[in-house]
Image (cartoon, rainbow, N blue to C red):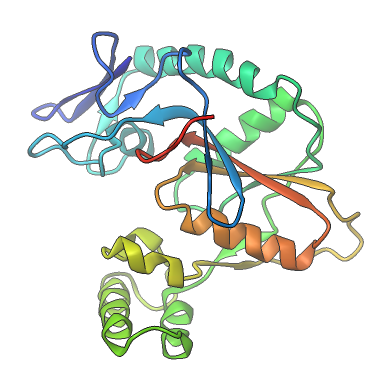
Length: 252
């Protein structure tokens, strides 16, 4: 089951006839990718790599954009119901023989999709703590101020600065920075869009942490989140779960 986009109606639907954009059936899911720093990322739905249809918005994942209400895309209750039915079956496979996580941590986002997904995961796991205060987004101004310290070429610094300044012009320096603003994907790894929130010193340090995001593309945000948490909790085991995988995911 993939997605079909009615561009005229800006409607995204689940289609059993193909796997365009994504594989949403239980067969073949979940998928696992290992990021360069050994962060294991499991995704409920595998995205498929393919040429985006002309005029189709949504960054090659139109259903996620419809769920977020972006680009005026929308979907129907019946299609969300189909995804939820598959989600329950796939998530049961993921949970099989999994240990208990002390913390389930959503990455901060301007959309509620990630937070809702994380709460659903916490509800189905039935143990551990839902922790939404430990990570926050850095502002665009803060990200821009770090460009000069980066050990990259002057040309790449200029490219990053221009793209961040473009974001600031549109949203202001205090707006939470969005990593997708960086169009040169290979430069995203130099940006840290996250910071630690207010750490509660009385909290028992977590032994196992599950990071939650709605989608993984390059993995930059998840890797930066893991780095921050490893620095604060060096003995913790950290892994990640996303709703939609990368179109470059390798399965295992």
